Length: 123
Length: 123
DNA sequence: CCGCATCCTGATCGATACTG
DNA sequence: CAGTATCGATCAGGATGCGG
Image 1 (tube, each protein chain N blue to C red):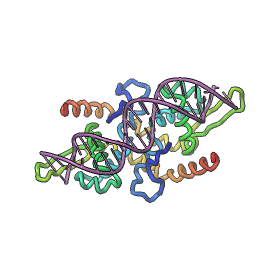
Image 2: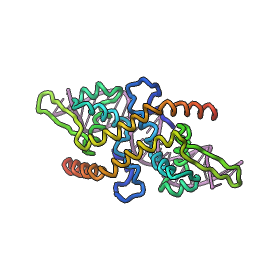
Image 3: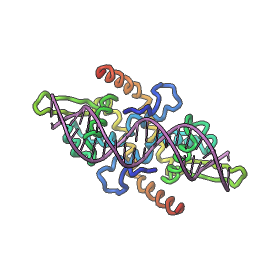
Image 4: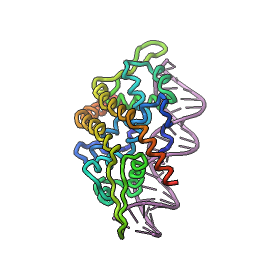
């Protein structure tokens, strides 16, 4: 994980890429939005994030936890109960995410159209 | 490219993922931000987007073009001159991108700290 | 100058099986 | 219930060489 996708020094000119480093894996956004509405159990996330495998869900949650965006709380029950929730830092990311999401709502159709046109012209 | 990363039907519950589908490849953001300041030639981009290979730059530009975010203009000179610029649709994406970038400026250090702490605790 | 084609590597992801 | 471990398949991305 974390793949050397970019260097972590603050002065790099590759500065912009960091914005996405935190967010842009296949499942992060989906998990993130699920947690917007409050804490969720592992099994709930598994059910609600359609198509995610156990491996990917765990991996994604670990990454979010490592980045300080998500809390993991384990209740000492049998069988175990684990709840995930956004941290305060995680909450600060919701606003930018929402804005990006609004852009999608407004313009994704245009993107789709552009693709069609492009694919048509370049048989 | 475009990897079946998600289905393109508008009604899918995986709606949120689309926001990133458009933007989240390794080099898209960097190219995008380069074009914010106006049209650029291929060779300029190649020089300014540090570390990008010809293959990746071309691939990235093609994808942005296909998505209708970038214009490609070829001047019939010898040797060829090619200029890239943002389309109006591309411009609409700048605002969300800028906001995400601001988040990075404000909180990336926190993420880095969280990572350190996490890695320390989970030796 | 701008790009395409090819080969090759390692990362990513899914599927499956197995634990506390 | 909430994971870990392992094995293949697939894919992104780098390096190189050629072409208009």
